[in-house]
Amino acid sequence: MRVDIWSDIACPWCYVGKARFDKAVQELEGKVAVEVRHRSFELDPNREPGVAEAVVPMIAKKYGISPAQAQANEYKLGELAQLEGLEYRTENRDHGNTFDLHRLLHLASDRGLEAEVWKAFYIANFADEASIFDRERVVAVSVAAGLDEAEVNAVLDNPERYKDAVRADEAEAAALGANGVPFFVIDEKYGVSGAQPTALFTEILEKAWDEKKPAITTIAGADDAEACGPEGCAI
Amino acid sequence: MRVDIWSDIACPWCYVGKARFDKAVQELEGKVAVEVRHRSFELDPNREPGVAEAVVPMIAKKYGISPAQAQANEYKLGELAQLEGLEYRTENRDHGNTFDLHRLLHLASDRGLEAEVWKAFYIANFADEASIFDRERVVAVSVAAGLDEAEVNAVLDNPERYKDAVRADEAEAAALGANGVPFFVIDEKYGVSGAQPTALFTEILEKAWDEKKPAITTIAGADDAEACGPEGCAI
Image 1 (cartoon, rainbow over the protein chains, first blue to last red):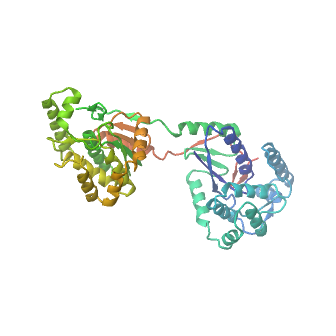
Image 2: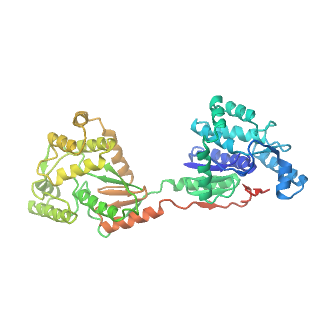
């Protein structure tokens, strides 16, 4: 059963939500087979590429809250992340344009390294001290996750590479009515918006799985005798 | 939308039912896209291969009816076939083991000639004077329908070729509860048993088509605020 997960690397609820979802998948191991497909969603597509900014003042300014409140929000996210077993750097995180990261994530999908590179980018953005909004660092993290250095550089050097793939993911999210992320689509049937509790994911995964291969409904017409069987053809 | 049709070449209701189904598909042209996949079903798998028998006495003996009644049944089938625009040889048809025909039909599927060869075999069995239960004739009909003569002979010479494909089709029919043919499965969802009227096929094809891509149902959890959107991340 396929689960499409739209996320942005710069989205803390995506980082937390993915861990909650993963726990549900783990709980259902042996009962429900899940194949995840990560999909691109930029929260902030108009942000200038190549320019990183500290998260706390950016958030404070954007939402008209005090820097102290913005910092408190980061601490809260850090606590929630920790509950899911995730490292979260609550101070001095930075933020930037994620388009190039999404293009590399599509390269990773093509190379069979989708899960590995999403995970590496999340950790690089939310847990590590070094900024992921830095080319050298992106290359290093990508290569550590298994991608080929020359290929990574070739993608970064050519802004057309995987551009359409990112845009197609975003267009599909818009068509599905997803305004925010994480957004999970289970078996092309159920959408789950937000970092829902593991129990909700468990329930909906089981439900979709049970419904997956519906027993066919056989239609009996006015005269269902016009068939041939081992005993012959009804006339 | 895929429609799987289990049939046997030796099944008159399959011949008639396919024509009724085809009319429904034609009526829905431009509205409903249908991709047919023919599946194997032997009505009489234990019949000795290579030995053909006249239909009328075989039917009379098998069902304990008079030869006149068996012949009357053939006339009735001929009339119903004619209503669908099909030729039907009502006298002196013969009957035999269809396993080799099914193996060749699987070769035809592999060569992109599935529809052509099913049609050619039906006509050869129900309309033509020459028997299809004759190797030279099978080869000639297959080649006329587009198959390669050497390939046809290679399949006929090796009883293992496509044996598993035929058996797999039959196992799937059994799993779906199909005891007779024709048996239509529309979009893995609706089963239609027998040579139903065209109107029934039209109705069920439209219904399945309309249901095909369900709008996703989005699940809102207890707290659906834990998401990030263009306006930021809810905390």
